[in-house]
Length: 98
Image 1 (cartoon, rainbow, N blue to C red):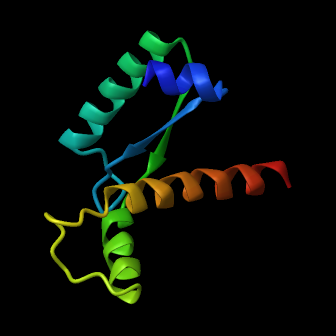
Image 2 (spheres, rainbow, N blue to C red):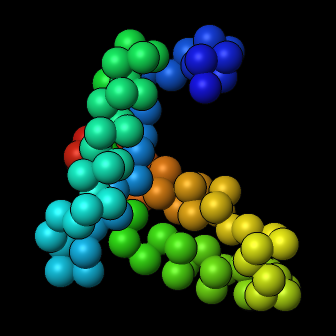
């Protein structure tokens, strides 16, 4: 990660927050916050948490539409889910600027 931060020089980091479907904090949410704090501290960057509910579901759906065979162990969808989480954050920034 440090090498990527050195290369890309981001202003902040975006970390997915796995909330429960009702929006409440889960045990995984707490772990994600801890990860975000450690990562931000180690890389000296602010971290913004983003609701990642349904990102894996949406990534699987998009993958199937693109012809994914359904073997997510052999062909994981993590990078697509991360892309969707980042898109969620970007959409929030656009809305915040209006």
